[in-house]
Amino acid sequence: MRILIENDHIQIQYTEPQDISFVVQAETEQENAQYIGQWSFEEHKNALDDVDILHLLIKNRAGESVGYIILKGMTNSNDSIEFMRIVITEKGYGYGASALSLIKKWCFEARHAHRLWLDVQEDNTRAQHVYKSQGFKREGLLRECMKVGDNYKSLVVMAMLAQEYKKENTLKNQSTSDLLNKLDQIHTTTLGIERIRRNLDLADVDIVAWCKTKIKAADHIVKQGKNWYIHTDHTIITVNASSFTIITAHKAKKG
Image 1: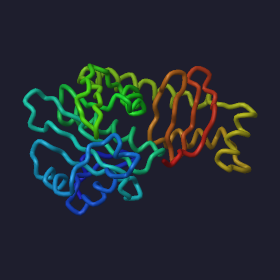
Image 2: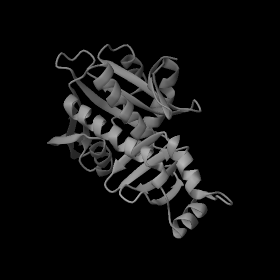
Image 3: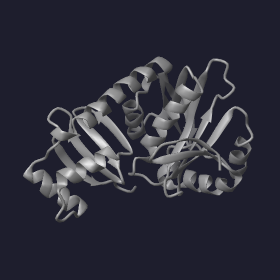
């Protein structure tokens, strides 16, 4: 087992030959297959020895395989890496967002890439939203460039540059520090307490104190719009960024 990069939430490891069966199965699941190109067992296996490709496995902290990633451009002379593929099998736990954050960190900080780019089907608006929230910018549209059955699909090209990653990382660290430095201001309403008790089946627990403890041990904190979203222990806590009110907390949904 060789680890490329990890955090408190997941490990990203180099794919081994014994992992290929999982990869192929994940790729062919109906929910994934409609948006992901299909490789054979042999194509995935051959990719392990391709010096231009990095084939990676995503594992949670229980040691379970929860997805895989393929990067291309390891020999690119322009310092441009293609985020070729990501598949998550256990959805709703934040594994995808966590993996994408780690890949950005590795590409720009360890590999010193100048550009990280990807393409995504035009009708896959959910994925485009995720990439946009992670700082990727839309660069253009490859019109009807891919044939699927008797139809043609367009691909949206999105990318992030090294200077954009550096700026995003600075702002993210400041935002997370703002939340952690103001834990004493975090509170909620009576309705909020009732909602969280109901969602998480918590009885005879100080909800605010419980949330503060979870926030301090968070796997992943992201600020989007007016709220912070704290991913911790398969739970998502939502906190208003201006009032520090805990809006809700609920178990992450499993897709």
